[in-house]
Image (cartoon, rainbow, N blue to C red; front, top):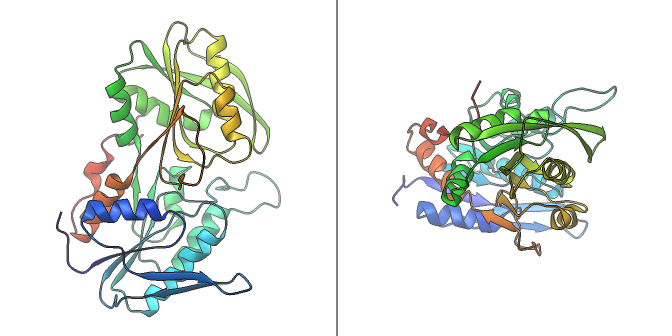
Length: 319
């Protein structure tokens, strides 16, 4: 695949394998970049190739540790001072997005703070995928392309040809995504009414809709501790569901997540590689789909000044 000659790709340490796959899809080589540490832990970045006047795409998810975010900011700063023509921050996973509003006294809105940091560092454009809340796009005063992994997941589940399928939202916040998925897969829909007494603690209370004698797909944007997914799976199982599948774009998988998934009645969990999973010992019931082609195609179209909207075929905008 041939793209514009002035396109450059650079990445930090957050998800090097995904950046390599994106570069391979585009027929490009990753720009050489040194990302190292001083003895006290401070991050040092040096872009080893000339990028003056080039269209630069920095591929760097901002999942924990916070070093990933700092690497992104410093790479943007280095690129700006190296006179890149345009700097696009490619964030397969946008960290700190869950704090997107002031719903308690004396708390921060970190989704806006991170947007400000990226803008101030010198980014000209943003690419994200499946933000925790779509309105976060409005936190950026920059052109913003928001990609949807539904293109990947819906294609995968069509190949399974599951009969009598019901798509389940594990909480009220994922209703729009579940509704769009159910429409695309021509399936029924149900909702788990979840209570969250505190952060990272989920309690499934009631099921709205019927899953009896149906195959179930639980659809969410991310899995952190797996409390919501596991509770939703137990809830639908108790209500007569047959095979239970789950799909989430971002596999944060912190704390006891893997243990909860293993013990849950979920038959197969599908996640994307927006977060690097290469160092994890994932159980057999977890399958990882690559988002490299989706992101690579978006990068190509932006570099070629073409429309990106056709990539939004399965975006969750059903009303």
